[in-house]
Image 1: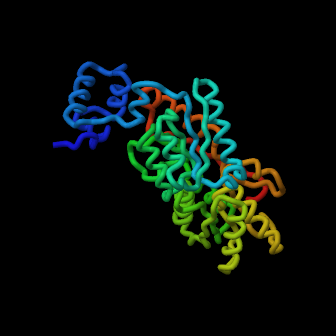
Image 2: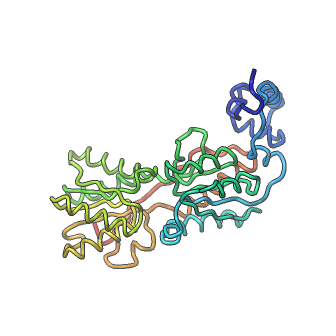
Image 3: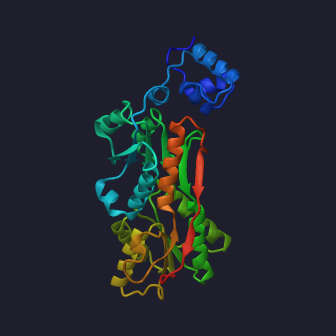
Length: 334
């Protein structure tokens, strides 16, 4: 016998022979559902003693007309990285055409579940999550309680999660391919954090191109997507010996930090070391030399994330995965 409240929405969908989104539409009032599917879902709910969570109840009853942006980072990184400004601009652009307002939560951790308790207590209709790490377990608790759309692949990589990402693997490929085509053979990388999907995917693209070219990768050092992290990683690359003649750096901020270290050592960019960054944020062109970089459409990503979340809140069935394309912008550093 099923324990009351133990069933999940996925189990209800499996028992009824319908999709998860169909169950969500039934919980939201039964609109746009065939009579046969409606009856099957109701029978499955009764058989499994299913109790809808807060996310389903919010669809079936009232909405707060508020959505949360959850950023599992500290405030220094949030206000210091232009990526977040672009994401928020896109989110606001889409919300301005809706009845929803935005609540911002910056939390590198959630001691005492303060933010989690607020977000899962019916105070918001859904949440957008960006810059998440695999260690951010509180994000998964939010994901289980309210509709969530991730900016980037979700921490657990579940098939039923919703996310909007850029093609980070291809971005790493086009950056590294450009360096290979320019004749560089000792190519190192300063990768992003490897507990984040973006860091893992950009490194994968880098390695794939070097393998295809028959080249051994130079030093691989992890950074933290900050200028200081890029500078520290650049020092480790140089300390490894056999100085590379080119670098793929997984963010523009880290690239700026790396360039500063190279200049301190009397090395010229790109004559001694060529560099390709990633983002095309304002720091790419704020100082000479202007950075050759991979452009990711961060504003578009924010807008697309919001579009998917609003569709979910309306009881629609948007794509689980939306992938945006990157492009190489050639300037002065490679």
